[in-house]
Structures are given as C-alpha cells and as structure tokens.
Image (cartoon, rainbow, N blue to C red):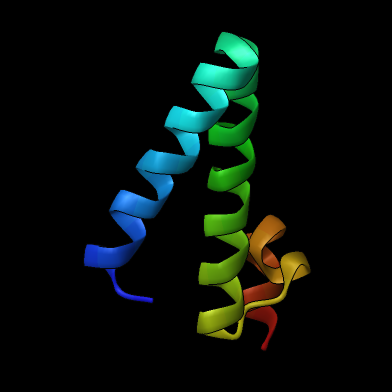
Amino acid sequence: MNASLAGPAVGMALGFAGWFGGFGAFLLVAALGAVGFVAGRLVDRGISLREFLDPDERRRR
C-alpha cells in the first residue's frame, strides 16, 4: 500500500475511532498505528527488535 492510499485510510480510521469511541479511542488508535508503522519499517529493513533496541548489537556484526 502506498502513501496516497495509506494516508486517507489512516485518517478515516482515526475519524471513526474519534466519532464512535471518543478522544481516548482516538489516542489509542493513533498510538497503535504508530507502533504498527515502526514494526513494519523494521520488518522491511530486516532489522530485528533486539538490534533496534540495542544499538551496540549492530556494531558487533
């Protein structure tokens, strides 16, 4: 999915969460979306979670 499709999809998801669940649901959906984005970027780059959290792990390779 490219950015021109992801942007409106995320906006609609946040809008529905805000409308039906209130501000707390809006924040929860936004936070989980950010976590998912970071996890997806790590998978795309081939970086494990351990390497991401421990910068020295990358230097040891």
